[in-house]
View 1 (spheres, helix red, strand yellow):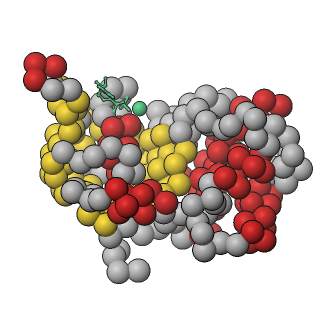
View 2 (cartoon, rainbow, N blue to C red):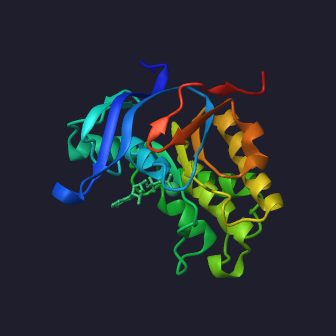
Amino acid sequence: MSYNRVVAIQNLNHAFGKGELRKPVLFDVDLDIFVGEIVIMTGPSGSGKTTLLTLIGGLRSIQSGRVNILGQELYGASKNQLVKVRNQIGFIFQSHNLLSCLTVEQNVRMSLRLHQDIDFEQRNTMTKDILEAVGLGDRVNFYPDSLSGGQKQRVAIARALVSQPQLVLADEPTAALDSKSGRNVVEIMQQLAKEQGCTILLVTHDNRILDIADRIIHMEDGRLAKDTALVNQ
Ligand code: ADP
Ligand code: MG
């Protein structure tokens, strides 16, 4: 790997809308996240956390600032370059976004479809292994509607991690879960990340999971607080 910072952001600004409706939502954001770190981002609703996550994930174009993700500068990047970056990122959202017409196994397997270097047999093995790892080895042929909220979110985690992404972006992944299932899914994420050596940026309001972080950052009114607390050391 030719970089040690998975995320390197300088002077990122972002606004929605144009003209009189223009509304700036991110101001001079600087953020570095190093290989293997688990970083939790907290902050009030509307402070810009999701916007920042979507910019980091290459899901929105950068208006101004330097945003280097996995060695790729996103400002001015081509569509192809953005797709390449996105393929190395696992996304986990608040609502699991599983396809209800596909089984658990098919939902997970689908996120390998863009990885042409992985052959059919490997895909089966990787899918089975990750579903075992999240404790759903006995649910592979179930449909999402027959699973509990916590189980669905574990499928979403499996789907995000099956391709062994370098970076996982998780936006309030426990928001729809009770505290026990919430704890359970982040512990699975933490364990898999440590095993695979991937980096995690996780947005949460859930104070009960803050201890899984190596570092906590705080967003307020579109600005990242400079003082970041180190935990677990
Ligand atoms: P958070 O995730 O911290 O709750 P968001 O990043 O979703 O915050 O939103 C930050 C601000 O940007 C809010 O004021 C929100 O209303 C606004 N916003 C978010 N997405 C859009 C959009 N697609 N169009 C216009 N405004 C948006
Ligand atoms: Mg949000």
